[in-house]
Length: 172
Ligand code: MG
Image (tube, rainbow, N blue to C red):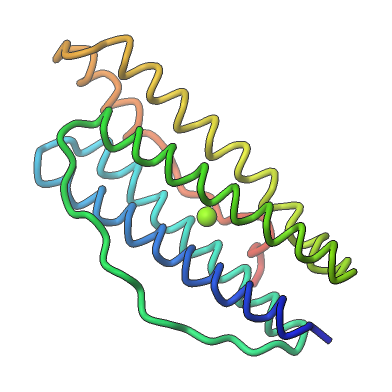
């Protein structure tokens, strides 16, 4: 049985994952509207992954006999000055998500909830990847600067990203 503290913290995290999805969907829409179709497509996949993260937590609460409570999703920004600004925002946001996952992990340890701790291991590893990916894209964008050909090439490369179902959701 889950403690109320853990149940509440996971519900908060579910809202946070949905908010992340909203943020990336807004970024996708923004870049679609300014003709950066590759970046728009990259962010649309990012949006799907965040909703997947929410579903992983929802499945976990259901499996443990917890109670899912969906709360309203707060407003997100709708436009960015440049791809570099959006990816810097993405990195900053992911760093914040990492801190939240670590806090949840610490709470699970304090509560001696080893099943929750185990489930969170996937998210701990996922956050390392999220931060690394955002940093790599920032590095590439910084390298090409304002160069139109360079940005075009990055846009094309980002457009090649494909969506994969996260392993905890496979077959669910
Ligand atoms: Mg996430």
